[in-house]
Image 1 (cartoon, rainbow, N blue to C red):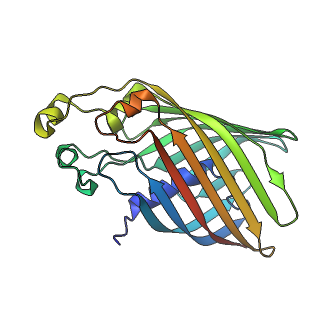
Image 2: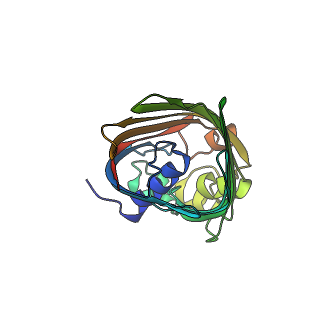
Image 3: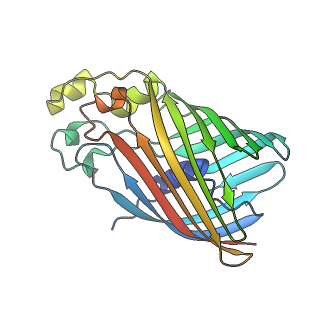
Length: 249
């Protein structure tokens, strides 16, 4: 199996951003596997081996390819500046569809913005807003979610649901088909509008010891019509499953 290098790590950066299973210790190292259901035509589901590195301090945190600086942090609230390399990538060479092979490559990009979370006994509210700073998509993305952590002595279960908004630039870069691409591929040209994509997620954590931990995170995203109507897409959903073991020190 081909190892995708930076592409794989960028996927992990996005996974860590939504994961509530990440270790909150000073430093942690680990190994994991990441499974992806891709919505593009002719794309197989992918499983990648992924190394993990994370750090969290009073003012600064780093989780794979996500970094942040806290503007405000107390027992109930966290508000930070963030930068994350995200994996919304399309490589025509990875598609088995002959029309898709004639489209342009879509690259991952660095998204920077703000993240906020609020914790109460009744659950956690989480929100992020970020924009492309590498001028690949020139898009904006916002995310809002509610999670309900269930904690026991050595394990935790965190179900949640939310909605993600993608701007028209974001959707058009990753799912639009230009007139030039349409002439080359025979696909209909397509220009995507902004969209709201609802999702459900589940995180789980089990502590073998004080230092060793296993985790699982999964997210199922229902794609909006603005994405599903693209001739590049043949699914009504996408999903990510991530699981592994970490050591905190």
